[in-house]
Image 1 (cartoon, rainbow, N blue to C red):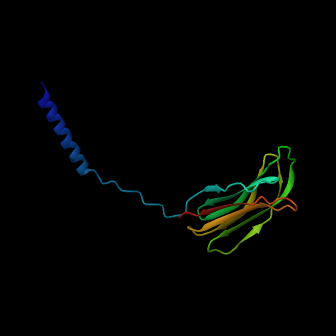
Image 2 (cartoon, rainbow, N blue to C red):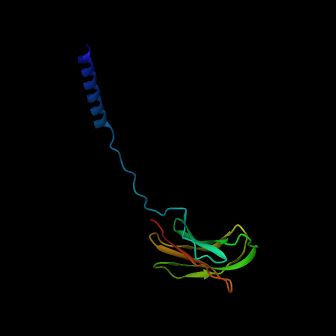
Image 3 (cartoon, rainbow, N blue to C red):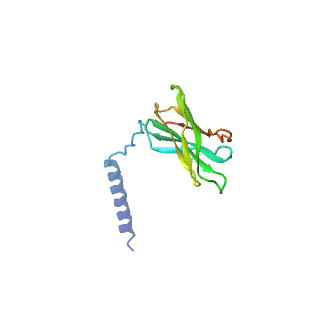
Amino acid sequence: MHRPRTAAALAGAAVLAALTAATAPAAVAAPAPTGPTGPFTTCGTPGAPGLLQTRACIEVNGLQVRLFGHAYPTNPAWVPQTVGFRIAGTAVGQPPIPPVYPSVLVPSGGIHVGGITTTVPCGTTVTADFSVDNGGWPPSPATVTVVVPC
């Protein structure tokens, strides 16, 4: 039987492992991020259905935020046409963000509607509002809120 050799080999391996662990440098945790993050985009739930379905979005890239929207026809027989929109927003603790009123040609597949770009401090809560602003049409308002991470 070779049990004494096996036991000795196991004991030697245990001693070697203990010595290696004792001399190995301690693991150092990576520091938590302290600066702005991004880019990422967050879109809210769709607005009330009307002639167009709307969705408000916020793109964060560092301390810069862009408020914009998406518009999609709800009728499969939609004929491309120019539609007016309203994009507005707020940033808690910051000066008011003036709204913009873009008019864009909306194709049958929908479209991304340009927006507002501004810079805010990290930790700021930002809300975007996007709606149809076309005389006599239902506005289908949509909103989304994000906190700009630090």
